Length: 331
Image (cartoon, rainbow, N blue to C red):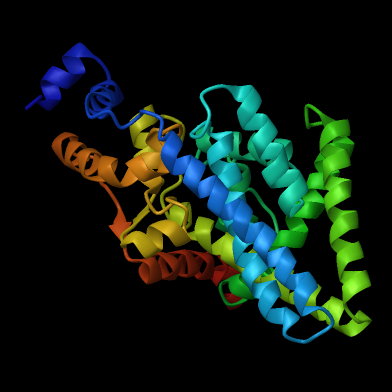
């Protein structure tokens, strides 16, 4: 067993952990897993839209809207893995598949999200550098808390998630117009194809009232599900001050969620957030195997390792939101 003193004498704490992870073969590609997963998601997407057209102008189409919302979220999780090059070794096939999954399939700019998510990984939970905790509709820092929404944001959290899908589309268009995306013409074209085809399908198949109901249900469930896959990961965890080394910056700001295969599938492996942040390119199925290795190592070097249940993770995030708005409620 390597002692803390020996580790620091031969390199950084993360270097020793990386050696252990590599020795266990946990950074190796998993092509068979991703072939099955991508095929499954693609078939579910095709099946959902096929059901939409077969059901036709019926209120049963709202059940299809819920199913497609789940599939859209799973497609977004696939795009997440593509962005981290977990699927393909090089950038070109990753980017091509990401554009199909993001822009064309679900109507979210892959380039915009990848840029935003890269900044998040570099400085998770940093008040100034992580766009996921920057001032927005929800506020994660008491210094930025203002207005009615911040005052009661813990109660409004899940209702606001219903708008997340539409917000991503709005932010995608804004990013394309601002020039922050590398290939704005290609991304804009694919995004336009998605939006036009989506709205045309609703207009041609459903009555106006059914189309509106489908749009609301589909986008609301998609937003809530997608938001719930990311909410447990960092919300309510410590905010770094910039002096931490790589390992501590990633571990101390992240929270794991325990559970079996159902939680793994529902959250796309993001329940192993600590391992994912330490090794972003690690294939999703390897995160479960890496978890005990990382937890034991953190115990060796005295780094707190947060792991909780799914419900408790949401409770912690909501408590933090409630505390941020406490001064506003007292005024």
